[in-house]
Length: 99
Image (cartoon, rainbow, N blue to C red; front, side):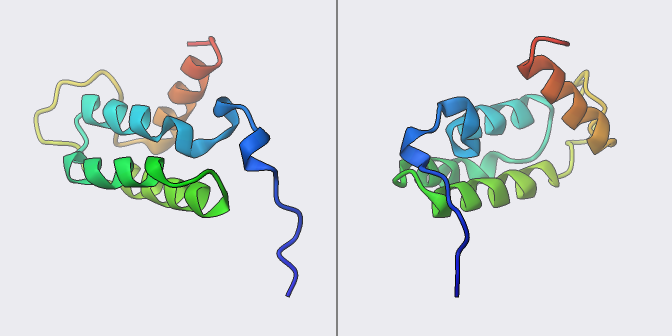
């Protein structure tokens, strides 16, 4: 079975690695009022793994789980967390200096 062409994860820049920003993503989701506190230890464990496909896959899966968590009732956050497309677009614009 062929695994296809995998990148050299050690040679990639941090901004190209989902897992390098997992801690910041976790904090941002907490700031937005999402109930993601319980994932803090898992974020640390994933970030402690050696760079590679498994780490990236786990980081992407955890990010998806955290983004699906509900927003605490009455949270005054400025992002409309009920509309994931708007939230994802805002994250993209902020990361690329357009927001």
